Image (cartoon, rainbow, N blue to C red; front, side, top):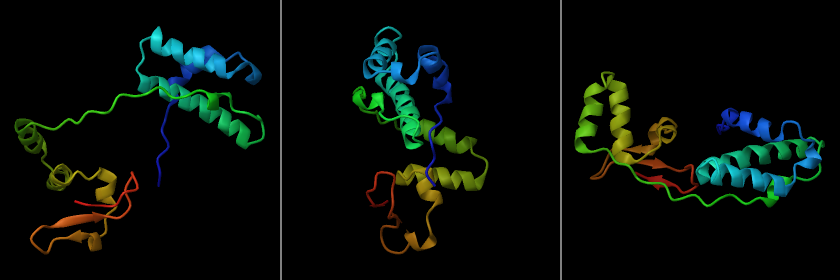
Length: 154
């Protein structure tokens, strides 16, 4: 089951900007100006500004899907380029501290498997025993369907 993102914390700014406007007054240019202001004047990151674009886009897509609006003005607004994410690894000391604080043996096992395999939690929890291969010189877990669409063995 795919989880829908919850952007409700964005709504106050969206309402402040567009709450009194009629749908026809929400133009591509007006949306772009709003997003530019969030980035340039309020100092929001590209990622944060893109979330505002996403919620506005979703609102107009939903209206169009239900026949209440004909064209989505947000489609003409491109997302801001986001910097690449960074990899953050635990130091050996942080890893030891994490395991020491983990009193539940099942949780400790889950943490160990996640840290040693790079599986996402949902990928691990959705595995069947037929996908866990413990025999052989290099045990691995097979993940045929991943978030990125690329199967993996880890």
